Length: 258
Length: 230
Ligand code: HEM
Ligand code: FES
Image (cartoon, rainbow over all chains, first blue to last red; front, side, top):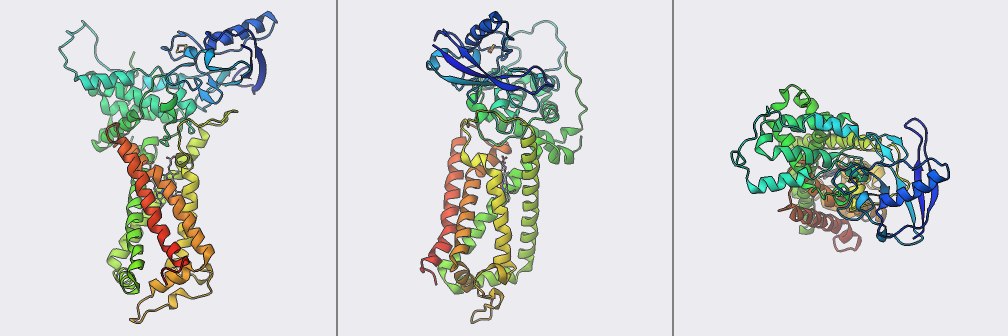
């Protein structure tokens, strides 16, 4: 396959970027999207050019590092699939593919297609943990967890924190990510003790990072590689409202868990 | 952190404000439609209803002030949230694709702002009775029925006999219907009262209720223009 790529190139956070065109030749349909970019980069390096910077790590859809907007859709529009698991057989010979970084004020571009997603880390540090002393592993069935709750918590815990929800949202809102992180712990008995504080603190950290608000368009859920449901956003809204109604807002800010 | 800043200063809190004010405005819009549909029951019924409201300040004024408060809160939060949303994506994508988001959900601010402009016109037209805006050259406040009450019925008939005015009303209620086809289900999401068990049902309810509202409101100017009500 031969393709034409239109790629966002940007030297660093302080220099303006621009689109550049590259020919991708000899692409095998079984390659993943990132392998296709590797081939293009090898060509660029061989010709003494600067390779296209993009993020990746596991390349098997579980780490959430890859982050490309492909033809206007985060991760390329294959349902429940990260860019690293997107295969070139979904494209046609001669296609023109536009590749852009996540676009959000909270995610500044560091270089080319690499953005700074540390606001997600700060949100997790503000409440995405359980403050218990660790020690001996407890007996598995000491703490009963209803099956429905553990299933739902697992659905939320699937979030790999890639940020596609932010990238897809017309408001660059991080609600789906935050909702998944809040819900996953708030659903489990271990997390219940800090339920109210967690909702308040994580929402506060989200707001401070400069993400937008939820317009309930559903774009986030549609592009999420882990198909996290919009229901979790409703659940977070509920947890937040419950914390307000209970008057739990006097709680001091939690220290970040280690 | 205090309660006030958690509600009016946070993303979720502002959505609570928007959802609750929107829900109450929705309630008003339903009641208002039912009130207006009395035009089909004839002048006696409608004028008696109008007279009742006009002469019952203990209902009229709390309702007016409550509505004003809801409108202020709704528009305030709409503008604050929309500005934050714009600021959150300073650089647009070169390839703009819409995934899943419905037309209504993407145009809430636009439909809302046009509805707001319509509400101002509507108040000048039928509440303040400003002669200049009704385009018929008649003074609506001078219309009295045989019992000496304000003749609301004739005011409607004359008011909507001007096609441009009737058309503006039809467009406005169309946009209100669009706004609510998303808003009425979105408000449950914002208040945390939605999940997969009845979420689809809420979505259908929102579309159905907006359609009924549209038909109910549009029936009045349409019937007058077609000469069915005179
Ligand atoms: C009778 C008039 C109106 C009614 C019944 C109404 C109703 C609603 C409802 C129920 C919602 C959903 C709340 C939520 O998402 O939680 C909503 C949202 C919204 N309304 Fe209104 N509204 C009205 C007028 C207006 C006006 C005048 C504006 C103009 C500024 C406006 C702008 C918005 C915006 C921007 C949203 C939020 C959309 C989002 O979150 O993206 N609305 N409205
Ligand atoms: S590289 Fe790990 S999910 Fe794509």
